[in-house]
Image (cartoon, rainbow, N blue to C red; front, top):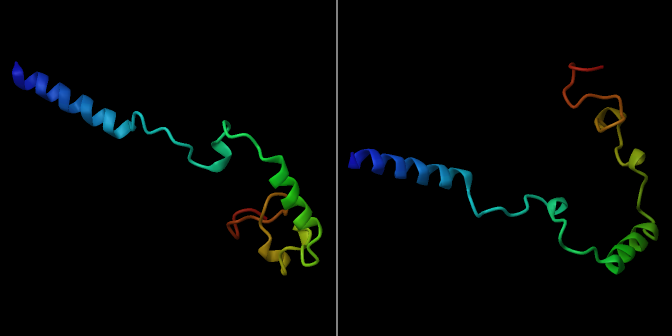
Length: 83
């Protein structure tokens, strides 16, 4: 009878450890919805990009059209899978 309770406690502790209860941290910056946006810093970054003479449009960012496999390009990231 005692070994049954020990087994149940061990299984419960293992589940708590595997599920990571209490370790809920944002995985990526876009998951952080609590931190307020620093509008001044954002405006400064936009000015820097706007005034950068070496900045390119997203469509011109790759030298070869075959290297562009992003959304809307019509290319597949896996050659031969999609036209």
